[in-house]
Amino acid sequence: MRISTTASRYALATFLTLCGLGAVRVDAAETLKPDMEKCKITFIGGKPDGTTHEGGFKKFKIDAKADFEDSANSSLRIEIDTESLFADDPKLEGHLKNPDFFDVKNYPKAVFESTKIEMGEEGGVVVGKLKMLNKTEEVKLPIKIEHTDALTKLTGKLKIDRTKWGMNYGVEGNKINKEVEVAFALEFKN
Image (cartoon, rainbow, N blue to C red; front, side, top):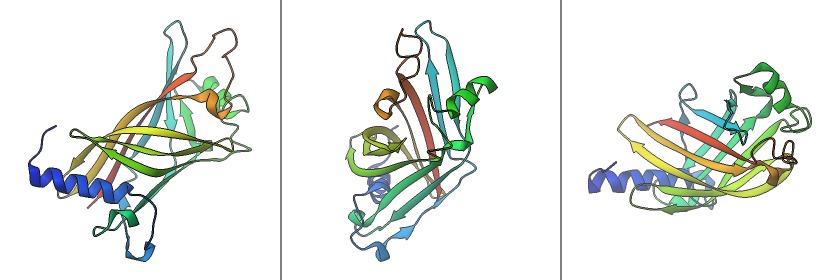
């Protein structure tokens, strides 16, 4: 998507503010308001034979603070309620919630926090830490930015290797793919 230079600079400034590094002057940052009815986090997992299943999370919190003067004072944190996991098959949904995968009784939250932003001409990459099952790994989220007077929207997809967090079920014997595709759409009211 190509946008005007002014709009491009504004979108970049908004994004950098949204996902900027650390918070030096937290009191100078403004809290952004996510439109939770339009925010989504979904995933697709599969098997080597090409069979796939879709799912996602119904409940999560987004804490985004933006300092429009200095993006270094901005932050982005997403806390996912793992119990809210859903899947396109009820039996699979139950299995994904048990200790073979998310172990939702012992680990009710998964958390992403941004640490660095790398911007390019068509979008960028948000680098951050994803904590699941009491393990933290760095992930890189490629993003696209849409910005209007009414909203700012971040969308993207990435593949993660679930075994990095100890989700090893089905790896032996190559029954289930290690990589899972995660998609996200985060929308904020301006």
